[in-house]
Image (cartoon, helix red, strand yellow):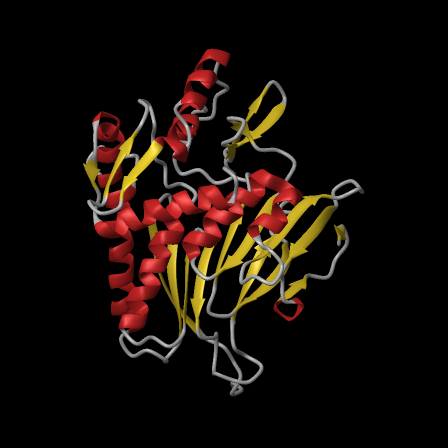
Length: 333
């Protein structure tokens, strides 16, 4: 016999943006949940068609192809995304840079086939990378690039932005509780999983252990917020015995090293995604910049531990009641 506190969910998913997107409801809470989820996933497809850099017909691809030759009009919501990307670039001192597309291309990650560029190729890509080369016309809602070769790449913010739009749609449909994720690394939740109880006000989200496949490192209680996790566990290549991940440090032009994973909890998924990428790049020195004390953003940084196979967990501005490390060996705090 099922107890009143048993939790059952309805999950509707689809492949999009090179990962699996899922919308998760409390079973029986929303009568037309499946139809709403299909509308949400259709919206993700529409957004992908607009911002992908893998199709020449997308709005973002058009901007990349033409903005170096003069001002280009940008649709209102995409213009707002580019403005947010500029603000996050400034906030992270360049740790997050949506205009680092030339670097992504030269390292082969645009085609998901990593390669080490020559010194000349890297120099040219670095010269064309950076949001400082993107100029905004606020009144006309236009952008232009002030040097040739600049490319906008939404890889570190696009999934989160799509999830935020899905949350907007769910709220328009009066859905009280749901969790939306893209590839399990970009997540946003509203309401709570299960029946609304005093002790149940959030959705539990597990963080993977970066060194031990299949093991959960910790659980975060996500209460009307978003979570983004960045790491190079699945996208990397080996060059002369050295493992190089797909997350590039825009300041140096080379893949970031030293961090195993970076997680940020923020108000929106776009913010959480971009800031987790920045924290992965900046390392421990970036904790106070990404998640300043007293702010609404929190962070979890996983570094190599002192013992072989161990990890060290650093946190910033995190509510202890909303975060629990799973029991087991090899975790240092």
